[in-house]
Image (cartoon, rainbow, N blue to C red; front, side, top):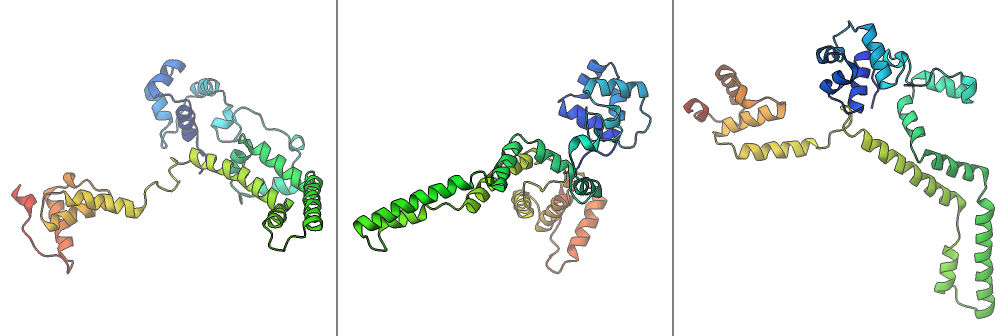
Length: 268
């Protein structure tokens, strides 16, 4: 996952996030569709300043945000003293060693406050005393059973009471991990369609799909291999010229595994 790094990318992201097509944006802003489309092209540099102000006001963001000078859409730069960040945290954020955008998504997730609260309870030992009291109660009941009934060491009731002991370390580690897993899964779901995210299908799945398509193709064995070769490389087989097709066949015929069957494509 990565953020927009140019005015063009910012403008396109803002439009897409609002679910607007260029025609709809043109109607709502009074800026022509062709101008809006050109503003989002990577190689376009001349953007009307008045239109930039109009778009910033329409999207409710600052010009600094459009110019990629800040990651804050609305808030102006806040003094560090108001954020209560120590020097080490500021240095880390400026170092580029961590993904600040991902950190922001973690911190602004709806369950992040609960995640921090659970960590704080554990760090401050707020629930440790209650857990120790529960363990002491279990030990008291277990001791009374032993004194009154003299059960054997393998007695199932004693085993249950022994297993009922709670380790605050284990309890809170599971609870905090569950909190974090929920947050991470939500963020992963949001970024599934990102271009840099892993594809939904594996190479094996893609090859299997291509092989099935080739199997139903009516042609010689060599032509089927040519079709598979094109599919794997993302080449439209039907768009090959006769010359390009002949060169492709010649290349494939250099393989020792290939024969020289008559081309069905030439017949057609």
